[in-house]
Length: 438
Ligand code: NAD
Image 1 (cartoon, rainbow, N blue to C red):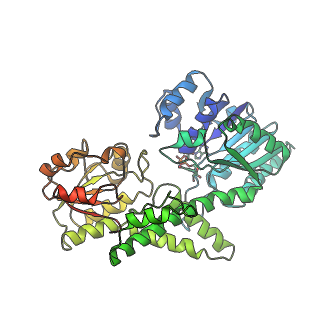
Image 2 (image 1 turned 135 degrees about the horizontal axis):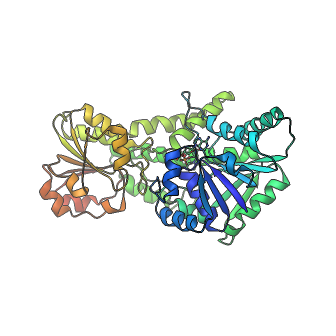
Image 3 (image 1 turned 180 degrees about the horizontal axis):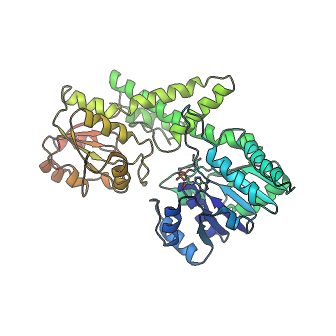
């Protein structure tokens, strides 16, 4: 089977590589010439564990190819997955310009049946816009060629993307023809050996499922952050509350971690887009508006704690940051809470020493080379620091040598934004230690 994946970002590259891994002939398309040239040379533009060797292996076997021209491969493939970006528009709704541009290109150049599958996260009704964009181009050409559209939202998590794609909890596919359903069943069948389910449904429900899933997860995070903030005021400990409620099987243990707010390329924009979709349909998403509000406040929580620690004056203080990426195992800094923190620290007159195992280059690109000191490692970051702020819970930060750190820091203050350290142990080591929700 031959397929094309349009958009070679986090989702497109992982999707293409994983399909190639199960024997599909895949062409990855991207308009970003630098990205494609790099990939042709075996340079992977993103950090995703396990991805590099899989790309290299499949490219070597010629099952995974890269091009900037959709036109050049379009008529060799039966299925086109569109995985281009859908960034938020100024009003919060999803910008569909890339998705529709891909659809128009398909309509302009296709000369036989195609199944056009949208993998990007798109609002309900987008598949019909894709259908219309393709049909308009066919009409302009005065040709009548059959095609189907389908929706196959992606649920992979950056940092665990390969395993999420290879053995997902489920695959959701929205179709409106038997032909499309058959093709999608065939494509996903090899993964079925791992015992997971493909859930077929109508297209609007598939489009909605993705937003509902991300909004539910964002809701859990904001809910727990709200509970954590209240715990601090009433003298409860959110870590205990979390294990207390998580053991209820109706609630479950996952996604109950308080912290410094959600970020990344998905939750913030998808929550915004769903609120917008509701508005456009005369409905108010009251819960989601509160989810957003709590999240905005939470991004400043470490800064507020720090300010309190230094009686409202941070001028001249040196602050060490461990972690910059919006979560571990990724170099993605889109909407990362660390960016809000960095901005506030700089405005308050602090010097920043930061270290992240993967996101330093991306952070330099965003805040500039000279604004903060990018440390060689986690120990270099704490040198002469007045306080250490744990921002992203990378594994390597979990068991540091506190004895070494104690000697290098100016003041022994640790503010833990992800609740990964043990309070008793930290206090025994002589640190002033605060975490979220106590
Ligand atoms: P990304 O920004 O990493 O990649 C998008 C790519 O599309 C870019 O490389 C860009 O150059 C390319 N592109 C744009 N227009 C194009 C065109 N006309 N032709 C070819 N290529 C084009 O984005 P991403 O993180 O992979 O996300 C893609 C979609 O998947 C979004 O809708 C996102 O919401 C959704 N999604 C993302 C994740 C995630 O964890 N990143 C998870 C699930 C779903």
